[in-house]
Length: 355
Image (cartoon, rainbow, N blue to C red; front, side):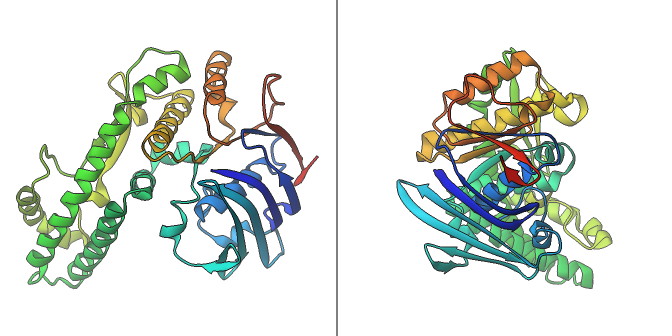
């Protein structure tokens, strides 16, 4: 997948921006506060129809403006597409090849970007809900069955929570049965995905960092299980009914599952330095990229915002050499000028303009 060009109007601090992009490496540099992250945020939005910084569309509009426009020529599976997005305080309108487009679930599999930003690293460290959301999105990307199960599960949990708030216990056994069937499917999918990740993750970490530690992704369901049996889950749901009624929502299930990165037996949240959070999260993103490239022959756009700020020079060299071997289109933002050996294009940003 390649973003050939981009055109912005009244987006963040860009009154207007037009750029022809490299299909390889794009280095976007300048001092802080000039709009580097805003530019890659626009690229990410065009691919994923969401921002990695905010859930409010109004935040994407230039100050005192009522609307913004994002447009790009995007090549996916060797087919050229024109993507046009109108943003306003009321929401967004997506126009794909001059036809209005409404189903995000059908859009994403053709236009997907993987990003690593300071916000992503912080969310992975501190916000379990965002970790679950991240993995849900990645697993559902090419697995329609997982997406269907996830949507089904969300509806069941919502209905059960409504009954709990009403104090209605008569129908809970019925909904617990449906919840268990749906939950077990999700947990099996998640466990299988984590096993696939762990086939590559440690090797990629060592290649990126030059270190010898073993990096693993840990998946911890909200209840202890080795075989994901429905009967075990139903028994646990019944055991937790009092707590469910006390809190007014289902206290166990895949909506409470945890994911963590483990480096030589040490959990990320408890032991990682800022630099370790950055390089291990990058290793995870690059592992997901490997799976997508190898299994689906899909090369997502890679967006790496302020990646090098907390990495030492040795690691930066390992990382940069790794990037040069990839077949993806890559966007890197930095306060530093490009390396002399950088292929592709370089863009300096100053006050919302490419100079």
